Length: 411
Image 1: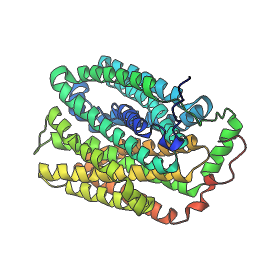
Image 2: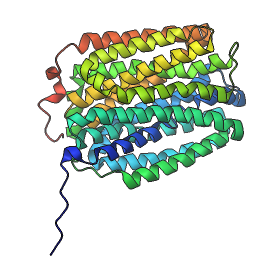
Image 3: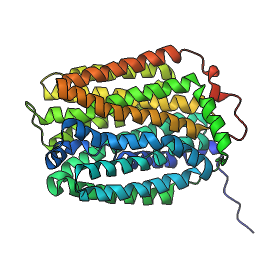
Image 4: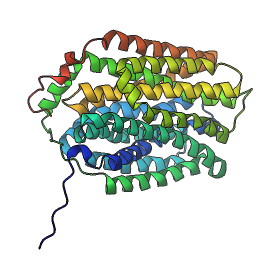
């Protein structure tokens, strides 16, 4: 007598916990490299005799690459599928990371950092579309917070590992070690990530253009993009030039000491997943407002001459930014129901353009006025983001253009 078939799990009980863990891992490896240069910036500046703004451009090159390719990666994944793009991008990311130690001059280093950035959107843009399609609304917030927690841990680990490994291997050897970790992560995701079950290909360029035009009429989405610009402006600007501030007098921290400062990221790892119920309760608008206020207050605290106060201020500031990121991504996933990947690509274009701008403008302010100048311009952009979300997100969600009347051929 044949054995009975095991019961089929409903979609809402689809291995949610297992996939949530894998989503965390994807976020981790996506961001392991993005900011890894920050903790060794003083070493790189000394090696190549670079100015603070030039050193900031080496950080911003990766961020700029992410922003430039994000909208196109959304269209590409809409055409060929989610898992293929995610896994290909993870493997490609290994190549420029492995080549960084062999950079013969500063311009080659910047170019390789830019190539790293070109790979990242295939992960960060597409995984959000994957989560939105494969899981019911009640699980999206949990998936999103798990993903953001992974990105936070990856951002911290890249800085922490590079800073400490450079003490033993030099900054070049540290990047070889990161490349090996990247390859292991890519292989793990290729093996474990479940294929899409609800993905519908959209290979018509005209339909993609219609979807883009629809998104450009969505004021809530455009506001989210503007806030994203301001949010990453503050994070990249702060965590790039705080390294130069802390490496100078009176702090004079070494590369491993700077790496230890990034332990403040672990606060975000703990707080962001636990914040999901509060985000639901407060709503996306209020979460963003509180998050930006927290972040600005933390930055002001870093203006003191006490290292302990600086560290606490960075912890407060970064946690506020992570809450803003969770709220903004969650708002897009909830209010945009058509062409999600393209909408996410638009958001990340603005988000990472803000990071590139932060690496440049905060650097100019640092060269002219020191850390006080960087903090002033960063807080100004945070106030701008809070103003935008207050003015635009007060409108009901039902006014979102992307939630209604999808164009023919979009999904």
